[in-house]
Length: 136
Image: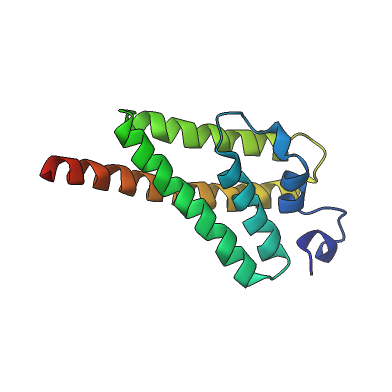
């Protein structure tokens, strides 16, 4: 049961992003972006087990990004900006005029929530890495 089919549309936001994943910036961790889009597709198809597994890949990538940022001396502001660039790229893809505006807006809202959770995991890991380094 696909959201696009339910709304009598040819494509859903997640499938639309999946088809256009090559348009995301090179800085993006391609595995994390791919897993996030796969999560959306699985949720739209009511495959909750697959969605949970895909989301775990996203969270692992976010935590790794936080650890890597801390070890490389990247500031939290830069980490936030990098994640925000990925979110902006996904919005640019959604709002390119080929997807109906209501579906694009629904996809953008869902994607913004997912990016907020990714940022939360990345920053928590970033600061946990700093605390561990200061204790050692």
